Image (cartoon, rainbow over all chains, first blue to last red; front, top):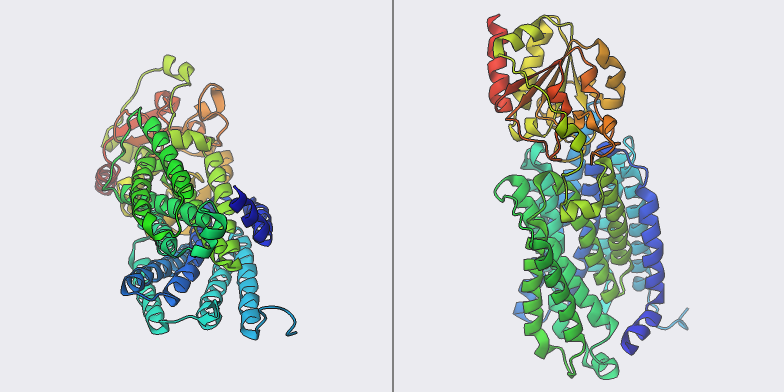
Length: 100
Length: 478
């Protein structure tokens, strides 16, 4: 318990960011038309690919072969998320625009 | 400036890049929610991501050590880019929802792997000082749990949308899932209350926890119906966001934190909006207690009248105005091309053909737009339900192809119906109604549709693709 409490104090900026980001996320997309639900979901999907940064950090400090392999895999998967996510979203939106 | 502890120019540049990336994420998301700016918004977010990745490789430091293994990292990025790009470009538009699910799962898996890698490396000093019950360990364990559930769940959702995994509905499932979920939380408590000097000895437990989380992810998605998948994917999407944010805590990394939390909260709201478009609650989708209600409709059934192919062909060919209402059945039968052939044929005969598009028809919002665009149906022919409703009393024939709930008058008439209040296409206003349907089964909402019993309605039973093909042949031979 003590540990968790001190973690809060230590990371209070991060916790501020979390709480404000929650409100921001809600505010930013609350007026989206139904036809854009799917592309928006797909775009958000690409953004959480930011997890790749963690994968890069893991791999950047890997010492053993085992951790290198897992780190490599994590970077590949994270990249798949980022690249696939953005490209698919773009393809979907291209479709929507063509019909204008 | 040297007075600031830990200051270095590269560190500042890295943090500035992260701020820029976070702003681009927010802007991108904002722009994605407006039709005119959506595409640009996607590109903004992508630029933010590239900046964050490049800055991390160049300037990230851990305990004064820069990033090593750079050639391998770049190799992994190149490999991932190639695979992701090819998959994303090659896959047919109709397979988009499962693709989103697949990529979401990849992100979840990456988050889970990060947690598994970091767990044995929790510094012994931290444990000596605070014991296992510290925030660092908690962030790792939550990241592992949520990331894994998201990965496993997304893969099942992917399989379901791709049609090789069916629904599994057992009543007791609810309780089994609850038990496993509590088990997972129990695991976290168990690990955090161990009295150890280093985490390495606890690693086997991490693998067991991973396995249990996989089982939970699978069982969580298994009972949910195919038509509800977009909602589930959106929910899993926000899960992955939270898992990514845990990484942000772990590495004290603001880009991961803002990006992850933003998606976590926006994804949750989007999930709720999607449910609302179907006039249902999120709990309703997850627990799957749909159906029931609407007794008035069930009691007041009537006579079903069928129509022969030749009658249908004549009726359509000698109409002035025809409106087609496509639905899930059209998508399942992959009948969009043959449907367009029919409308071209009728157009040659001087019949005005339009499509009435309900926003939640199909498997995902906007599904019908994408599907018909793939078959080259011109955009001008696709009319939103609100716009076409006033026009329906002047419509000679309205053809419902594989749609059900979006034309169900119970949404207007029957307050006890689960879909009461959902905006619908007012099909019964048309002069004649032809309903193409596989059989007399109820729609996805499992409620009776009084439209089928309407005096003006006639049914054409069979697979949408086969029926349309036969209809095209009939019309041609007239």
